[in-house]
Image (cartoon, rainbow, N blue to C red; front, side):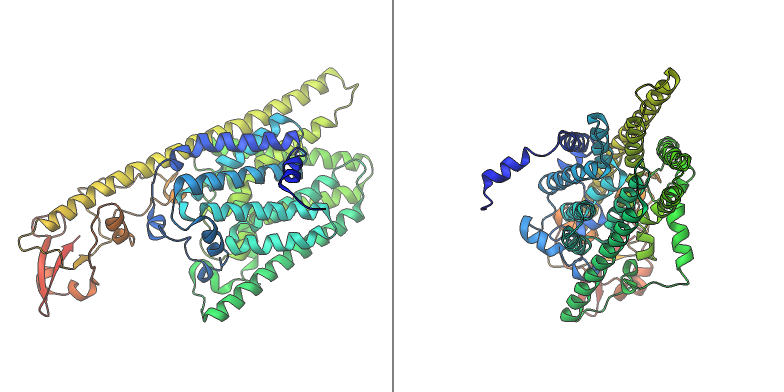
Length: 518
């Protein structure tokens, strides 16, 4: 039968009400939290360097980035790319509530909202140039788990989704793994659960993950070989696909530390304040308590194997969420720990499942307990989402202030350069000791809550200054290597900027250049 646009429109009517609530929750919360970033251009250091590109593609193992850039352009356009990313996230939320089997419109809307405001999404929009591609990676990872849940030949499509997801961004493998593990865990806790089907499906899930990773590594190495590229050490890319038994205990420990340290550490930018730590830890232990209670009910029914398998899957959940530590022995960014959002999602799913099992003839005390549990879950997740939304706007305010400071700073420097006696537009410029700090300039927003989250730890002088000067200060000139001038006696005698004499025209080998010594 021919697949027409009319059939596609008719298919949209089959989307459940719960999924539309998840979409609406993600879209509304996303606009509230990130609307300012989408309507303004607030670059960090990487966004300046990648203004016309999707960033490092095949050299970082992200060979599919160029395909996305070919579709929607490679300029870092916040409104277009941001809305596209938010749309992809909202569609991903629709699949997630289906995987988690959420039924309550309120719970579905909260699930979408917390997905949209999680700190990893704040970080994503700080790297606007690739936001749409990275969110497509997230959607494909979620779709991989959803297809696995359907079984049969859908698993082959799931492998394809995972290969392409990793080809866009490797950090979202944890979404596929965590959703698969939780799906099996939830099945073990059902009253009529059977161990064998769950175990067999678990083996299939492992096979899909292994095939997806192997397929991705195969494609990546073929592309590297065709391009004659030798991978470097950035983010451990040269070790991609290798498992070092000596590092494995520490990597597993990192997975559990990420998951269980929410109450006492920033946890890779996910809970940077006491309030966030309280709320996220509350969601975490509410989920653990409800899972433990469901496992206890299985034991009371005499279903020891089901309870044991549920316990095993519960222990695997932190590893699935933090699987990025097994892939990357280097620095783990806030963007890479997006699967930690499974904590409030699982709390919602377990609370609804627990409440659905309430007996019709339950005593008043049991009814009050279930009502209290639902209110606790709703309040925790809603407050967490609200606090994350506030954090997003605070982070974007930081970017705005620092961008304004930087523009003012470099406008002054450029004005002083052009005001030099004897200055000519053809003179090259040399920045000496560019990593130095000018004490007359306000520092960056000195807060651990935002530094790593949106990339504002970099001081005013960074490797992206030349791009900034061209794009925002309207100063495009030739820049020379500082090492060639730093050792000159005349330059060594210069005071640091902004002191008088810190900007001079210096001659070297008969060539004049403007030297700015920081």
